[in-house]
Length: 373
Image 1: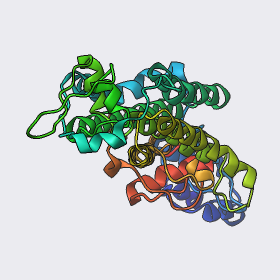
Image 2: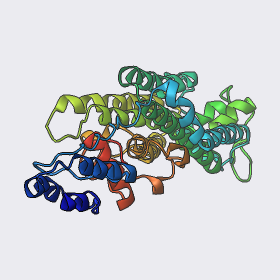
Image 3: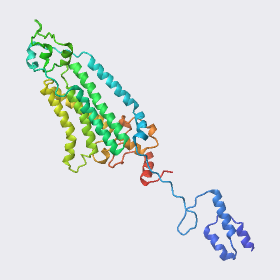
């Protein structure tokens, strides 16, 4: 009994194997000892790893991490708009600048009597009116973008597509009107703008034209280069072609030519508008060519500012959506995605991206379906 008494007051840090051997050595029950040992372990709140064959409490399963919430308009629309508040302010400034460029008087290039032979084309009405350009180049693509949002419910995609489209057409409009005012090239129908009655009048010394037509018509006659219809058409419809290429994965290397035809359709419409400007004798062919290149280049830059290259899965969503997946808790601290220095580049999967070691653990936790502790 004395040996059993000493064992009951021994240090409870002994192993479970030793405690289980005591009854065979002393012939006494050691339940109080085991209970005391368990009480000390519980009071210390120290986790005990469970091995094969051991008796003990198992660790509770970690809570499940469900991942970032889906970005609907109602839940994320205001947040996304606030992140890009400065971008919308810049858009408003571009509108004001473009209006000012249309108000000022363009440069009046010298037009002599010998030059009028190439500027006597008839003054016709526009096949494509000026008011129709924003409808098919801006409103039409916006309707398609909103339709895709109704199907996919991704506010990042809708917001960035509309923002990129507006930047494309407004930057193109400012560049086009600035060049028009600076160059002052006469239109092919300048003769009838300058002499609506068909009676020409020239300076006796310089042979420069002395116009007596309507001032507004003459002012518009000095804005031939580049073509505004062409640049706006390729800026808006060119951006739409990029956008559709990403959504239907036209460059997924599977050889579906039908997808390529869908992407070409907006560009074909823009090309037909450009051709109509030459047919109406409002522009020289160089004007529409330069306007089309200008609009398409600006559209490409604006699209790639918000979206990755349209190749496979990584090109389906904008850069900001992948940022939302990787860092849903820190969205409020994310700067405007218009700054490409803060975008993580894609590396080959739908959400495979280059990132630092500090972001690797949250991504692994999300993929494993658990919350990082």
